[in-house]
Amino acid sequence: MALVNENFLNLQTNYLFVDIAKKVKVFKTTNPKADIIRMGIGDVTQPLAQACIEAMKKAVEEMGHKETFRGYGPEQGYDFLQEAIIKNDFAPRGIKFDSSEIFISDGAKSDIGNIGDILGHDNLFGLTDPVYPVYIDSNVMAGRAGSYQEDGLWNNVHYMPCNAENNFIPQIPNKRLDFIYLCFPNNPTGTVINRKELTKWVDYALANDCLILYDAAYEAFIQDPEIPHSIYEIKGAKKCAIEFHSYSKTAGFTGVRCGYTVIPKEVKALTSNGEKIALNPLWNRRQSTKFNGTSYITQRGAEAIYSEDGKKQVKATIDYYLNNAKLLRDALKSLNIQCYGGENAPYIWFKTPNGESSWKFFEKMLYEIHVVTTPGVGFGPSGEGYIRLTAFGQLEDCEEAVRRLKHWLR
Ligand code: PLP
Image (cartoon, rainbow, N blue to C red; front, side, top):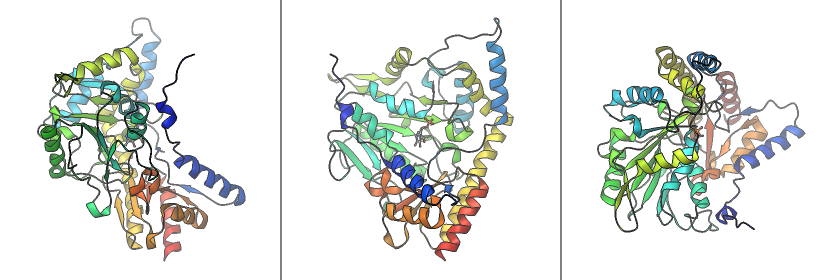
């Protein structure tokens, strides 16, 4: 009989959204008339940009004709999309890439989860707390995280707490790590990192031969010119960083599925006998073997994000969400509740009044004003005492949530 990968047995069930759903369901059953506003889960609500729809319709039509039909595509992605990415996401920022350094994916989660395939088992890695759970779980599956402890942490993971006290900027480790995950704009806190702080991380990585896995899934929300959209805006980052991008929140592709990963040719890691090996060809090989590529239709849709109309339409959607975020932030501030994020990100992270626990305040908001949020502690122990709100809802719902919040807390 086959043996299982027992690392999977070590995974902790992430009850967060299950527990939230259960509590909401019970409340709804006992209060059937309650008008519940959902500001918990990070899925988008606005439809796809028209430019993307038209491009995908055209691509579907092409698939219906012998002359223009496409079968298996390149696993790395079509060059039309790689070139659009280089031209629009990097060239204007003075960053040059070859198309072989851009790998089109079916979204950032897959690549973030799979990147560990090309990294050795015995790496010591670090991540922030609170954190996007995929960084941890994918390493638990690979047997890299060690064992789970009572404090909710894994013993082989270097945690970097992010809270109001350190302005949500993780502290540079006082020891060598082999790789680290950074995510800015951050999920769940909605906070960002400026050039000066990010430069410290790149310098640390270069000095310590550390690989940075940089999650830029929310970069399109950045408004402040001082905030880098890409880690490659920082000198030296091409030698030490892999960057993940997503069209999910940018252009409403959560259901369509497309993103990309940048692996510069210069990024290297060590073999056990000390030889430095480029990671780009390893990932290329990994993708060619295990990934079929993103569909032609989807990639044509993603390409349209970079058309003139596409850019305008996507910007309008992002502005819509950021306006929601502003409404929520302003309301919290007017109630003297300390809140973070929401200016360059679709998430707002706030401190519960009177130091209440995340779950306690989550329940109060649900039971008393019928607004569903996410308890911060669900993203890691340092999230205790915080609540996450998403700005991905409908404007009318945000306005109503603000009205209820103000009425309730005044
Ligand atoms: N990275 C972060 C920080 C996210 O919050 C998400 C999705 O919520 C992803 C990556 C995954 O994005 P995608 O939908 O492209 O897989």
